[in-house]
Length: 120
Image (cartoon, rainbow, N blue to C red; front, side):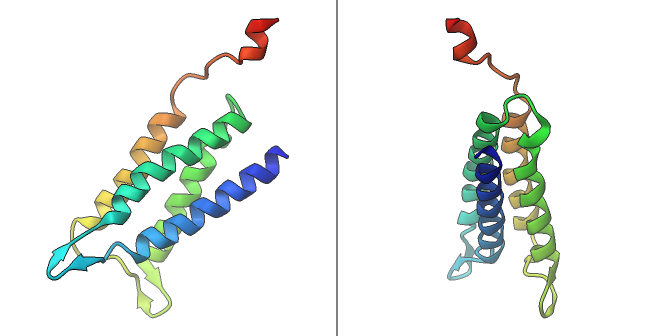
């Protein structure tokens, strides 16, 4: 069951990363509106937390971050038409930072003891 949860989380992270790269160029008029940066900052730590609950204390918590990063880099820098979809400004760097830093912070926090052990 835990492996199925991990597979679903990794699929979800890959789809989110693809959508975040696709919507990074969103603009209202000439003003960039990078909502996908906020989505990345909120969803990657949640994915890490879900994996941490399934695999407490293991390095599997970094799997969503690695998956997210690889999808963002592949679809951001390389695309079907040759060049990627990343705009040539500050948004790609902020997207990568907003996706990775909160997730790494959640993944590197110390593991809390399980309540079942404390009750015994």
